[in-house]
Amino acid sequence: MLLLLSPSFLNAGDLQFAWDKNPPVQNVAGYRLYFGYSSSSYYSHIDVGNVNTVLITDLDLSRINFFALTAYRPCLVDDECQACLDGGAVCESGFSAEVSYQPPLPLPQKASGAVMNFEWVDAPAQQYFEDFEGYATGDDPAGWTDTKAGNSLDIDDLLFKIAEDSGNKVLAVKNTGINVHSHYEQIFTLPFNFTGKMKRNSGGMGITFLSDYPNSDKYYRLRSQGSDAFHIAPHPNSAVEMIGQTTSGVIPITGQRYNFKIEVLEAGKIKAKVWPENQNEPAAWQIDCTVSNPVLTQGKIGAWSMLSNNNFWDDLKVK
Image (tube, rainbow, N blue to C red; front, side, top):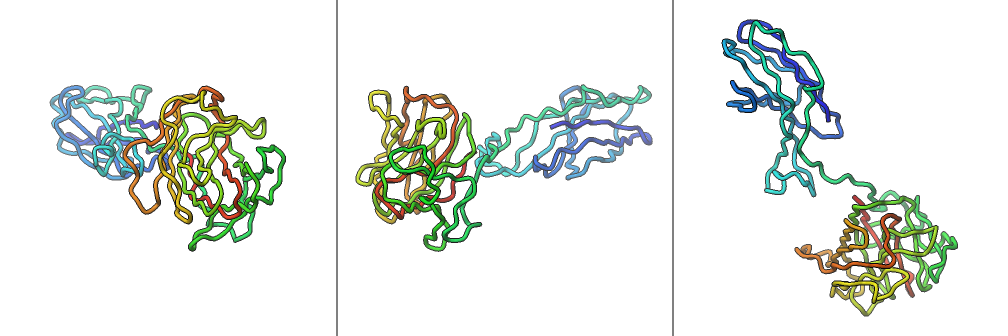
């Protein structure tokens, strides 16, 4: 996030400015050049667009002029920039380091003091997303490893395959054992935010997160065993080692797709919510609990199932 702002003198009242553009990943839509007659107090600005040079004319060069640059970009989904949180469409950075000029003083030089320090907060980086649409029915999705029933760490990569559900490709379980898993290979760390969809057709189903596989069978899990509500069930599971609200109150209806959202910002502190796909997201967390054993701060995500061969998972995202 570095920008260098450097003016060069052309004619009386004219200054040419140039700077280093931001990298493409920052999605900058344009720049604004602010100017005024006292430091950090700017009476006007111009929107120069997505360029890295501009000519300013008719400045009053009988007095000292002060200049600073900002960058701006469109607000993004889940954007934490305050302007976006307030309902704005554009997020603007803080000011670059200030430069000043008055003839016949020597022109300011590019220097470390001209580094732009952005104050915006980018939307959280998406670490993983999979909607399974790139696969054919019956495929084994890349990066996913299945393990046998009974919380086994032994691999059996025939337990979960790609299936089709109402025109969508999904990850589907193809084994009726108890505590069968599929694990995604990537390790995620705190802060952790995990969203996706689940559909229960029979038996129990859930999603695992911050799993210690393949080192051990310790993991956190958001699950329903079929007749009960989605709830937090760490493994090894012990209710006396959890405090707070551990259940969502949402009992899955057979054949209904559910959205889920899980957040772990601090070790052992889990928040979660579950809601039908065709309804609005609940404003409040349904689950807000602390797990004292196991305390997991990194690990893998995965799908969990029991006594079913047709439960589905889709649109899995970690950011």
